[in-house]
Image 1 (tube, rainbow, N blue to C red):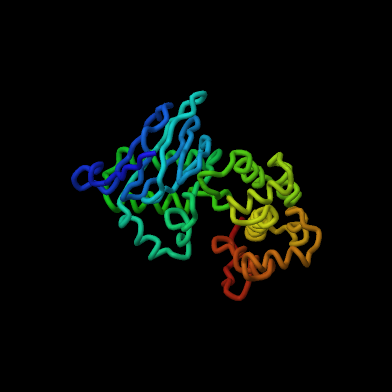
Image 2 (image 1 turned 90 degrees about the vertical axis):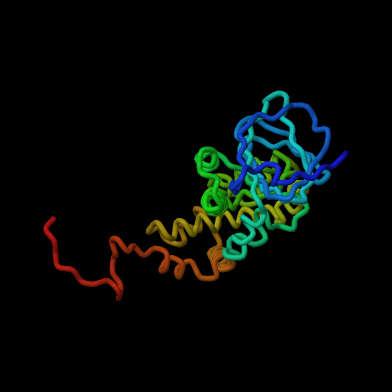
Amino acid sequence: METRRFLIANSLSDGAAYHFTWSSLDTAPARFAHTHDYYELSLIERGAAWHWVNGETALLSEGALLFIRPDDRHWFRARRRTGCRIINVMFRTESADHLVARYGDDLAGRYFWTDAAMPEVHLMRGPRMERAINTALELQTARRSLARIEDFLLAMMTRVVDYAVTGHAAMPPWLAMACQAAQRPEVFRRGAAGFVASAGRGHEHVCRMARRHLGITPSVYVNRIRMQYAAMALGSSDQSISSIALDCGIENMSHFYKLFRAHYGVTPRAYRTVHARNPVQPTGGASTARMPAQPS
């Protein structure tokens, strides 16, 4: 298939830092693929689309958020049965590259800056999907300034995207659904077995595809979600550590402590000491000043 290269200078009006479109995709196959000299963020807002990228084809469902790089060779077309409405934002590479230089700990090796063969895709659902749409649509009527596109990118990458549900544009839909299902306690409590059951495929096949598309095994993926759940509970409740471990589906406390330390670098107790402090209503400690009694 012929490949053409698109230039952002042909899309931006004078002084604009980004180009925004919100449109319905055609169902006809593309006559050519394209690359471009800019970054492109695309969100499947409604329906579904076929995406051909770097030699592979995937069906993108509603809520797919793609971080497309300049040299990704690709094209979209709507799925005939559902149609597709897509939000697309394109902007100069230099508008975002300095963000990764400044916030490397959060952004390096991810989003637009991954070396993977396929562009990164995140799957939005529920309130996170609504937040993604609302954040993107704010660009439609905003002044198309550099400050505005930088604010948008940081919001999408640090406040909207769910880090736990990450893959790339060629991820099979059944694997994406298993990733979504693994967010639920009734699934992650079962460990890798819960993930495999949600995928509805054989264990070996699921493990092989998880390594290909996620870069990790189902067990590692689920344990990451378990530890995020544990950290949230430690920082926001008085629940005992053993009870939290059981809520994560882990009965062996030694194994729980080992997993937690591997993810956060400290023990669960140390994590709670730091993250459970309440500066508004402190409950005690050396730094808490004694205040005179107040009438009830």
